[in-house]
Each structure stands twice: as structure tokens, then as C-alpha cells.
Amino acid sequence: MRAIVTGGAGFIGSHVVDALVARGDDVVVLDNLSTGRRENVADAARLVESDLADAEAVFDEVQPEICFHLGAQADVRVSVERPGFDAGVNLLGTISVLEAARRHGAQVVFSSTGGAIYGECEEPADEDSPRRPLAPYGASKLSAEEYLATYNRLHGTGHVALRYGNVYGPRQDPHGEAGVVAIFFGRLAGDEPLRVFGDGRQTRDYVYVGDVVAATLAAQGHAGVFNVGTGIETSVLELADACARVAGISVPLEHAPPRPGELQRSVLDPTRAKRELGFRAETSLDDGLAATWNFVRTTGGDGGRGAN
Image (cartoon, rainbow, N blue to C red; front, side, top):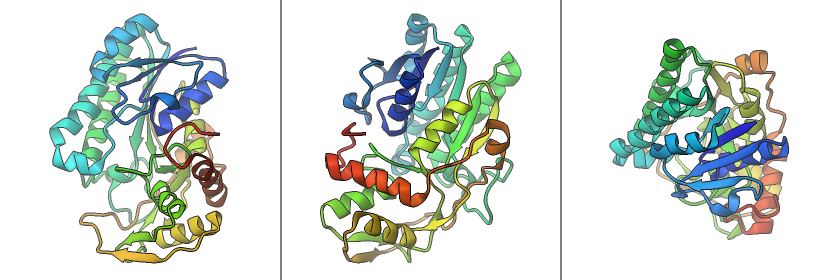
């Protein structure tokens, strides 16, 4: 197929590109490289360095059949400090993609977020659980989802939104608004203490990037909203212990004051994705952490392609 991957030079997007290339698709990456890396893009894919606002021109050239839309402003702190910028990328950028896709009859598979949309979870959140974003990032992603649903009703399109859990794996940059796995492994590689905010009992649904890619490709041809997670809660303390065990490195654990507004419990119910997409997260936490540590160990964890 002819596919466009927005954000295809980033952490998750570059893995999606690899999978599309492996199945023989003609892949064009649309990325402004503000956070993505040119070296992440597979040699068989073509990189167009541009913003989401320019999606129409790229779609006109490529004539895609499908767009995997992973380009985003994903830093929660930036969204709080610059909500207009966050909405410009995540909402207006998505509208640009939807309009371009409408002109060419292309499906959009949209990467959304679970934890940032559901907020505090009393139990594993399914797709119909209350949505209570605590930051503009979650609000902009949820707003973009509503635009997908509106286009499906208005134009008869079949776009799909995937609410990812806490994704981790090779190529995740340990700097900036990185996932805690990348941060922990970056500190372990530097023989630095693992810093835990608060008591460390806050839980997340950690899902390996390879499983996320499988769900993203499985969503092709479907419509609606699906959670992409494991349904398993892991505390930050448990994660720190697992990372140190996998790396075979013992470093001190240091506690820092809790961060204001941080979720205490975030876990997704992936039942709908299993039933309708045939998706089930196959990678155990230990296996996923081992693959991630091997990447960090062999590449220095700089976020590039390395040996992966």
C-alpha cells in the first residue's frame, strides 16, 4: 500500500515505518524533525521534512491509501506552559491530516493516549470510561479523537483512534519528556541513582513498542476507538527493581517530592482491541525491558536506530 506516517522519525513512528516497509508498503514519512531523528527512518522509506500544516501538499504528491498519524506534541509540561502551541499541533495538525485524507479517500489511524485522557483510574479503564484529562495534552488528543468521530459521521470515513498505554522500548529518548523506562535505563547506563517521585506506588500500564506497532497495523480497516495496553499495573518501585535486575546493575534509589497533578493509578482495559482487532500484548515486561536495555547498552541509548 501507499502509506504516509506522520511523526515517522520519532520513537513509535519509526517502528511503525519499519513494520510497513517489512510488509512491502511504499512509505513516506512526514516529520519536521523537531523531536524525531533522521537516522530513525528506514532506508527504504522516504522522508519529507515538513509540518503537519503542509499535509495537503504531501498527500497530493503521494496519493496515499492510509495515513498512520503519530506526529504530535507529546510533552505534558509543554502543554501546560504553552497550551495554544499544544492545540495547534495536536488538534489543528490533525484537522489538516483529516482534510488531506478526505480528499484522497485515505484512512487515518490516529495515535492517541490512554492515561492522559482517562485521568485517575479507579479500575482498568475501558473506552467508555469517563474522560478526565488533567493537562492540555490529554484535552487536545481527546479533541482530535472527536474530530475523527465527526468526520466518520459527516463524511462516512472509517478513521480509528488508538489510546496507547505507557509505551517503552528501543529508540525512546531518555531526555526531555521521556518515558520512565528510558529515563531509568539512561541513569543505569550512567551509574546514577534512580530517582522516584513521591512514594513510587503510582502505577502505569507499560506496553512494549513492538506490541503497539502490531495493534496499530491491526487497526487498519477498522473504525472507532481502541485501548492499546496490557491491562497489567506496575508500580514505579516495581519498575525500578525490574530495570535494575534486567541491567544487572545495582544503584541507589532516591526519592524526590511528588510532582503536582501526577496520576496515582493508570491502567487500560484492552478487551475491545482483543475482541475486534485480534490484538493482545505478547511481550512480557521482563522481555521488553531486556530488549530495551540491550539497545541502550549497545548504542548508548541516544535514541537512534542502533542495532535494533
